[in-house]
Image 1 (cartoon, rainbow, N blue to C red):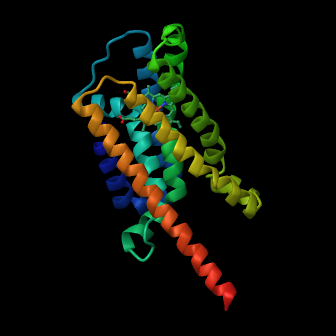
Image 2: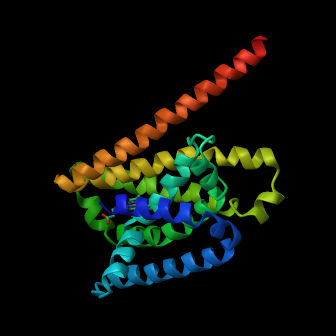
Image 3: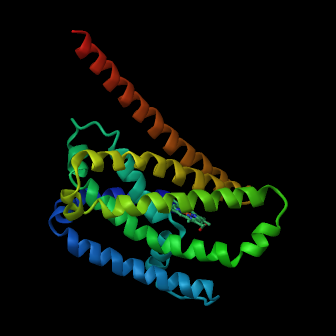
Length: 238
Ligand code: HEM
Protein backbone atom coordinates (compact mmCIF):
# COMPACT_ATOMS: atom_id res chain seq x y z
CA UNK A 1 0.00 0.00 0.00
CA UNK A 2 2.49 2.61 -1.23
CA UNK A 3 -0.32 5.12 -1.60
CA UNK A 4 -1.13 5.17 2.14
CA UNK A 5 2.50 5.78 3.16
CA UNK A 6 2.83 8.38 0.38
CA UNK A 7 -0.31 10.14 1.62
CA UNK A 8 1.08 10.26 5.18
CA UNK A 9 4.34 11.74 3.85
CA UNK A 10 2.58 14.27 1.58
CA UNK A 11 0.14 15.46 4.28
CA UNK A 12 2.75 15.40 7.08
CA UNK A 13 5.45 17.32 5.19
CA UNK A 14 2.95 19.84 3.76
CA UNK A 15 1.45 20.53 7.18
CA UNK A 16 4.72 20.70 9.13
CA UNK A 17 6.59 22.78 6.55
CA UNK A 18 3.76 24.90 5.12
CA UNK A 19 5.51 28.19 6.02
CA UNK A 20 8.80 27.07 4.49
CA UNK A 21 7.06 25.76 1.36
CA UNK A 22 5.41 29.16 0.88
CA UNK A 23 8.58 31.15 1.61
CA UNK A 24 11.17 29.03 -0.22
CA UNK A 25 8.90 27.62 -2.96
CA UNK A 26 11.41 28.05 -5.80
CA UNK A 27 14.13 26.13 -3.92
CA UNK A 28 11.63 23.39 -3.13
CA UNK A 29 10.64 23.11 -6.81
CA UNK A 30 14.34 22.74 -7.71
CA UNK A 31 14.77 20.07 -5.03
CA UNK A 32 11.67 18.14 -6.18
CA UNK A 33 12.74 18.49 -9.84
CA UNK A 34 16.15 17.00 -8.94
CA UNK A 35 14.40 14.06 -7.26
CA UNK A 36 12.22 13.68 -10.35
CA UNK A 37 15.30 13.69 -12.60
CA UNK A 38 16.73 10.87 -10.49
CA UNK A 39 13.47 8.95 -10.87
CA UNK A 40 13.49 9.52 -14.66
CA UNK A 41 17.03 8.07 -14.86
CA UNK A 42 15.75 5.20 -12.66
CA UNK A 43 12.86 4.64 -15.13
CA UNK A 44 15.19 4.69 -18.17
CA UNK A 45 17.44 2.09 -16.50
CA UNK A 46 14.42 -0.11 -15.65
CA UNK A 47 13.09 0.15 -19.23
CA UNK A 48 16.52 -1.02 -20.39
CA UNK A 49 16.32 -4.02 -18.02
CA UNK A 50 19.04 -2.86 -15.62
CA UNK A 51 18.70 -3.90 -11.99
CA UNK A 52 19.35 -0.98 -9.63
CA UNK A 53 20.50 -1.19 -6.02
CA UNK A 54 19.65 1.59 -3.57
CA UNK A 55 19.78 2.02 0.18
CA UNK A 56 16.37 0.94 1.53
CA UNK A 57 14.64 4.33 2.02
CA UNK A 58 15.79 5.63 -1.37
CA UNK A 59 14.64 2.38 -2.97
CA UNK A 60 11.15 2.85 -1.52
CA UNK A 61 11.08 6.54 -2.55
CA UNK A 62 12.08 5.78 -6.14
CA UNK A 63 9.38 3.08 -6.31
CA UNK A 64 6.77 5.45 -4.83
CA UNK A 65 7.59 8.18 -7.38
CA UNK A 66 7.86 5.75 -10.29
CA UNK A 67 4.58 3.94 -9.54
CA UNK A 68 2.61 7.23 -9.45
CA UNK A 69 1.79 6.82 -5.74
CA UNK A 70 3.75 9.91 -4.58
CA UNK A 71 2.36 12.19 -7.30
CA UNK A 72 -1.11 10.72 -6.71
CA UNK A 73 -0.80 11.43 -2.97
CA UNK A 74 -0.02 15.13 -3.57
CA UNK A 75 -2.87 15.41 -6.10
CA UNK A 76 -5.29 13.74 -3.66
CA UNK A 77 -4.24 16.24 -0.97
CA UNK A 78 -4.80 19.18 -3.37
CA UNK A 79 -8.16 17.67 -4.40
CA UNK A 80 -9.33 17.25 -0.78
CA UNK A 81 -8.42 20.88 -0.03
CA UNK A 82 -11.45 21.77 -2.14
CA UNK A 83 -13.74 20.18 0.48
CA UNK A 84 -11.88 21.12 3.67
CA UNK A 85 -13.79 23.02 6.33
CA UNK A 86 -12.05 26.42 6.25
CA UNK A 87 -13.01 27.13 9.87
CA UNK A 88 -10.40 24.59 10.93
CA UNK A 89 -6.84 25.86 11.48
CA UNK A 90 -5.25 22.81 9.79
CA UNK A 91 -7.32 23.46 6.64
CA UNK A 92 -6.36 27.15 6.45
CA UNK A 93 -2.69 26.28 6.98
CA UNK A 94 -2.71 23.83 4.08
CA UNK A 95 -4.95 25.96 1.85
CA UNK A 96 -2.34 28.77 1.74
CA UNK A 97 0.05 26.45 -0.14
CA UNK A 98 -2.46 24.80 -2.51
CA UNK A 99 -0.83 26.26 -5.66
CA UNK A 100 2.66 25.24 -4.49
CA UNK A 101 1.44 21.70 -3.71
CA UNK A 102 -0.14 21.29 -7.14
CA UNK A 103 3.14 22.38 -8.76
CA UNK A 104 5.02 19.83 -6.61
CA UNK A 105 2.44 17.14 -7.55
CA UNK A 106 2.93 17.84 -11.28
CA UNK A 107 6.75 17.78 -11.06
CA UNK A 108 6.79 14.53 -9.07
CA UNK A 109 4.37 12.84 -11.53
CA UNK A 110 6.58 13.45 -14.59
CA UNK A 111 8.80 10.33 -14.07
CA UNK A 112 5.68 8.13 -13.73
CA UNK A 113 4.22 9.53 -16.95
CA UNK A 114 7.46 9.12 -18.90
CA UNK A 115 8.03 5.56 -17.63
CA UNK A 116 4.55 4.18 -18.28
CA UNK A 117 3.99 6.05 -21.56
CA UNK A 118 7.18 4.51 -22.97
CA UNK A 119 6.42 1.12 -21.40
CA UNK A 120 2.98 1.18 -23.04
CA UNK A 121 4.35 2.19 -26.46
CA UNK A 122 7.16 -0.41 -26.31
CA UNK A 123 4.66 -3.10 -25.28
CA UNK A 124 1.93 -1.95 -27.69
CA UNK A 125 2.23 -5.03 -29.96
CA UNK A 126 1.56 -7.43 -27.05
CA UNK A 127 -1.23 -5.26 -25.62
CA UNK A 128 -3.09 -4.90 -28.94
CA UNK A 129 -2.76 -8.64 -29.72
CA UNK A 130 -4.75 -9.39 -26.52
CA UNK A 131 -8.33 -10.30 -27.38
CA UNK A 132 -9.72 -10.43 -23.84
CA UNK A 133 -10.90 -7.78 -21.37
CA UNK A 134 -7.29 -6.83 -20.53
CA UNK A 135 -6.98 -5.15 -23.96
CA UNK A 136 -9.88 -2.79 -23.12
CA UNK A 137 -8.65 -2.18 -19.57
CA UNK A 138 -5.20 -1.29 -20.93
CA UNK A 139 -6.60 0.97 -23.64
CA UNK A 140 -8.83 2.78 -21.13
CA UNK A 141 -5.91 3.12 -18.72
CA UNK A 142 -3.79 4.60 -21.52
CA UNK A 143 -6.53 6.94 -22.81
CA UNK A 144 -7.39 8.27 -19.33
CA UNK A 145 -3.68 8.71 -18.51
CA UNK A 146 -3.08 10.69 -21.73
CA UNK A 147 -6.21 12.78 -21.10
CA UNK A 148 -4.99 13.49 -17.54
CA UNK A 149 -1.58 14.64 -18.83
CA UNK A 150 -3.30 16.87 -21.42
CA UNK A 151 -5.25 18.62 -18.65
CA UNK A 152 -2.35 18.64 -16.18
CA UNK A 153 0.01 20.65 -18.44
CA UNK A 154 -2.09 23.89 -18.69
CA UNK A 155 -3.08 23.59 -15.01
CA UNK A 156 0.60 23.20 -14.10
CA UNK A 157 1.73 26.22 -16.14
CA UNK A 158 -1.06 28.47 -14.82
CA UNK A 159 -0.34 27.48 -11.19
CA UNK A 160 2.75 29.73 -11.25
CA UNK A 161 1.91 33.18 -9.82
CA UNK A 162 3.81 34.90 -12.65
CA UNK A 163 1.58 33.31 -15.31
CA UNK A 164 -1.56 33.57 -13.19
CA UNK A 165 -1.09 37.33 -12.79
CA UNK A 166 -0.95 37.75 -16.58
CA UNK A 167 -4.31 35.98 -16.99
CA UNK A 168 -7.80 37.37 -16.77
CA UNK A 169 -9.30 36.22 -13.43
CA UNK A 170 -12.38 34.67 -15.03
CA UNK A 171 -10.36 32.77 -17.64
CA UNK A 172 -8.09 31.42 -14.88
CA UNK A 173 -11.08 30.29 -12.80
CA UNK A 174 -12.72 28.64 -15.82
CA UNK A 175 -9.51 26.73 -16.54
CA UNK A 176 -9.37 25.51 -12.94
CA UNK A 177 -12.76 23.81 -13.45
CA UNK A 178 -10.92 21.28 -15.64
CA UNK A 179 -9.30 19.97 -12.45
CA UNK A 180 -12.49 17.95 -11.82
CA UNK A 181 -12.10 16.16 -15.16
CA UNK A 182 -8.43 15.63 -14.29
CA UNK A 183 -9.36 13.97 -10.96
CA UNK A 184 -11.91 11.79 -12.76
CA UNK A 185 -9.28 10.73 -15.30
CA UNK A 186 -6.79 9.82 -12.55
CA UNK A 187 -9.52 7.76 -10.87
CA UNK A 188 -10.37 5.90 -14.10
CA UNK A 189 -6.66 5.33 -14.82
CA UNK A 190 -6.01 3.87 -11.35
CA UNK A 191 -9.12 1.66 -11.40
CA UNK A 192 -8.17 0.29 -14.85
CA UNK A 193 -4.63 -0.41 -13.61
CA UNK A 194 -5.85 -2.39 -10.60
CA UNK A 195 -8.65 -4.19 -12.47
CA UNK A 196 -6.12 -5.39 -15.02
CA UNK A 197 -3.97 -6.97 -12.26
CA UNK A 198 -4.71 -10.54 -11.09
CA UNK A 199 -6.95 -10.64 -8.03
CA UNK A 200 -5.07 -10.63 -4.70
CA UNK A 201 -5.59 -9.19 -1.23
CA UNK A 202 -3.28 -6.23 -1.98
CA UNK A 203 -5.02 -5.48 -5.30
CA UNK A 204 -8.49 -5.63 -3.75
CA UNK A 205 -7.48 -3.46 -0.77
CA UNK A 206 -5.99 -0.88 -3.14
CA UNK A 207 -9.17 -0.90 -5.25
CA UNK A 208 -11.39 -0.43 -2.17
CA UNK A 209 -9.13 2.31 -0.82
CA UNK A 210 -9.14 4.34 -4.05
CA UNK A 211 -12.90 3.89 -4.57
CA UNK A 212 -13.59 5.07 -0.99
CA UNK A 213 -11.20 8.02 -1.36
CA UNK A 214 -12.65 9.32 -4.63
CA UNK A 215 -16.31 8.60 -3.82
CA UNK A 216 -16.03 10.37 -0.43
CA UNK A 217 -14.55 13.40 -2.19
CA UNK A 218 -17.36 13.37 -4.79
CA UNK A 219 -20.08 13.23 -2.10
CA UNK A 220 -18.47 16.07 -0.07
CA UNK A 221 -17.99 18.23 -3.18
CA UNK A 222 -21.59 17.69 -4.35
CA UNK A 223 -22.80 18.60 -0.85
CA UNK A 224 -20.85 21.88 -0.97
CA UNK A 225 -22.14 22.71 -4.47
CA UNK A 226 -25.76 22.01 -3.45
CA UNK A 227 -25.39 24.10 -0.26
CA UNK A 228 -23.97 27.02 -2.27
CA UNK A 229 -26.87 26.81 -4.77
CA UNK A 230 -29.42 26.67 -1.94
CA UNK A 231 -27.86 29.73 -0.24
CA UNK A 232 -27.80 31.64 -3.55
CA UNK A 233 -31.47 30.80 -4.18
CA UNK A 234 -32.33 31.96 -0.65
CA UNK A 235 -30.55 35.30 -1.14
CA UNK A 236 -32.29 35.86 -4.51
CA UNK A 237 -35.73 35.04 -3.08
CA UNK A 238 -35.37 37.71 -0.36
C1 HEM B 1 -1.11 12.94 -14.72
C2 HEM B 1 -1.09 11.71 -15.06
C3 HEM B 1 -1.11 10.51 -14.13
C4 HEM B 1 -1.33 10.41 -12.78
C5 HEM B 1 -1.60 11.53 -11.78
C6 HEM B 1 -1.21 9.01 -12.43
C7 HEM B 1 -1.38 8.49 -11.14
C8 HEM B 1 -1.27 7.16 -10.81
C9 HEM B 1 -1.48 6.61 -9.49
C10 HEM B 1 -1.90 7.41 -8.26
C11 HEM B 1 -1.27 5.28 -9.57
C12 HEM B 1 -1.44 4.25 -8.43
C13 HEM B 1 -0.14 4.05 -7.68
C14 HEM B 1 -0.28 3.07 -6.52
O1 HEM B 1 -1.38 2.80 -6.05
O2 HEM B 1 0.78 2.57 -6.07
C15 HEM B 1 -0.88 4.96 -10.92
C16 HEM B 1 -0.53 3.71 -11.35
C17 HEM B 1 -0.20 3.41 -12.65
N1 HEM B 1 -0.28 4.27 -13.73
FE1 HEM B 1 -0.59 6.26 -13.66
N2 HEM B 1 -0.91 8.30 -13.57
C18 HEM B 1 -0.86 9.16 -14.64
C19 HEM B 1 -0.61 8.86 -15.96
C20 HEM B 1 -0.37 7.59 -16.44
C21 HEM B 1 -0.13 7.24 -17.83
C22 HEM B 1 -0.10 8.22 -19.00
C23 HEM B 1 0.06 5.87 -17.87
C24 HEM B 1 0.34 4.96 -19.03
C25 HEM B 1 0.17 5.17 -20.23
C26 HEM B 1 -0.04 5.37 -16.51
C27 HEM B 1 0.12 4.05 -16.15
C28 HEM B 1 0.08 3.56 -14.87
C29 HEM B 1 0.41 2.19 -14.50
C30 HEM B 1 0.85 1.08 -15.45
C31 HEM B 1 0.27 2.11 -13.10
C32 HEM B 1 0.57 0.88 -12.20
C33 HEM B 1 2.00 1.07 -11.69
C34 HEM B 1 2.48 -0.03 -10.77
O3 HEM B 1 1.81 -1.04 -10.61
O4 HEM B 1 3.59 0.14 -10.21
N3 HEM B 1 -0.29 6.44 -15.66
N4 HEM B 1 -0.91 6.13 -11.67
